[in-house]
Length: 110
Image (cartoon, rainbow, N blue to C red):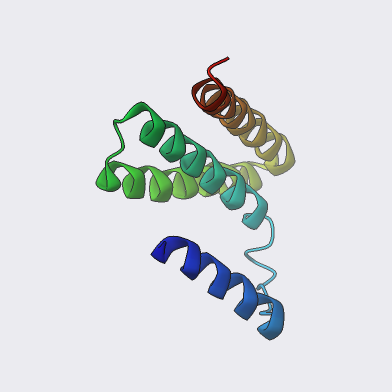
């Protein structure tokens, strides 16, 4: 319940304050969001499977975001940032849909 309350407060503050995202961070923000969603769906799946560990979730969440950002940064340095960004989104998208399918199977027993 605390996490949901924190999410709601964060969204409300974000809507009213409308923070500015620095231009240097803009290319990495969508990748970080997709990486974070991958960790969240993995955490929900682990919770439904009865193997959720909060330490593993936090490490997974942070490492997903950092590794995805580093891959995109490396791609930018090599001049192929958009291609590596697409690759990261595809790989994480596959993981998200895989976790979503497992969650659906668990919830609906189908």
